[in-house]
Image 1: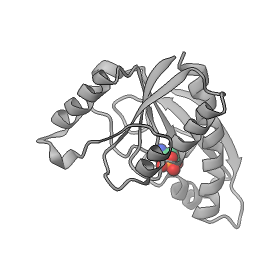
Image 2: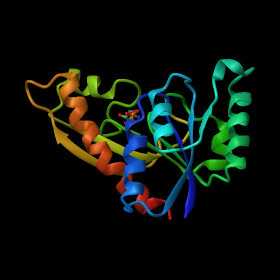
Image 3: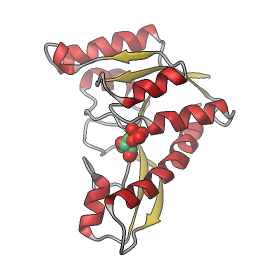
Image 4: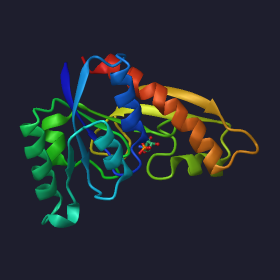
Length: 188
Ligand code: GRF
């Protein structure tokens, strides 16, 4: 069983789905040893308390710079003996300090069919561009913005009457299926 840390900045629904898959004995390959967040008001923290996942809060503005911030995170990762990092709505680029040690062992999920629509508000971007198909992508993390090697994707249609809310829901439902499946396959 591999020890993993989940990084989340906000809502944390992907974190929760991963935990549900562990509880349902589908994801038996991982143990989530910590929920790491950069936002003390992240709703993910409340979800983590429900699943009794230890929470670690690291706020960038409490540190001199990004390197010092990531060094603090790294220390905790070492204490937790973390082997893999799962990003689930973590809204910062991973810097060299973390990459140096964990490159190839960091996964991210993104709500578009990469390489289309990297960065923020991918669902809104897809809607605005008028593409007829979008989806979700799980990829390895490198030093770019959603640029790492793609592992797997799922797609869904975009309908004429979609709003950001309806499309977001459709894409998130793909994520809830895709991420646990990829985690199961990749983290062994
Ligand atoms: C997801 O759409 C994910 O693809 C993106 O951030 C969102 C996180 O949602 N990276 P949640 O916090 O898991 O609900």
